[in-house]
Amino acid sequence: LSDAQVSATGFGRRVGVFGMEGKEWGRFRSPCGMAVDKTCLYIADTLNHRIQVFDRTRKEFQGVVQLPQPAEDTLQDPSGLCTIGDGQLVVVQYGLDRVLSLQLRGRSLTAVGVKPLAPGQLYGPFGVGSSQGRIVVADS
Image (cartoon, rainbow, N blue to C red; front, side, top):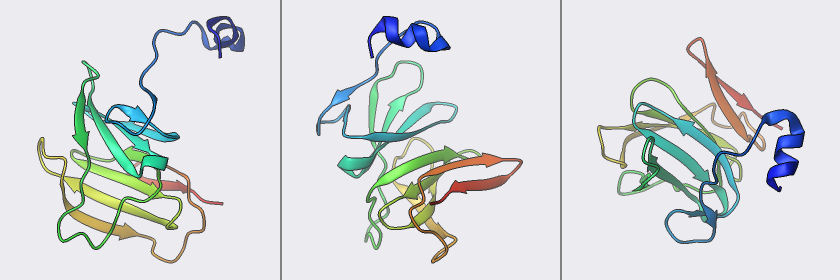
């Protein structure tokens, strides 16, 4: 959308653009979810099958979230993201019909714990959020 079209929607003026289309680090293919914590901005880069991490204030690329090795799970089609507590990231995987809770430690982007939530109960989950200590999933 042009700046005039964005302004006409009632959201106000555009203040910046973040990222471009592509496969390289810092570029996205169908980014569908975003979450923030004290220091990081997490973006679900859905069609690149990764979660990219940026410094929250400087918007500099920090890396991608990694699952622990040996990886029994993969980050396929991450769509929805939310943070709950310090270092915990909840990831919706649309194509795999599941939600994972990832425990990150400090500045490391490798998950030290991976826990499936509601296995076998979802079909096409897309969004996730948290409210009053509960995780809420948008499922089709």
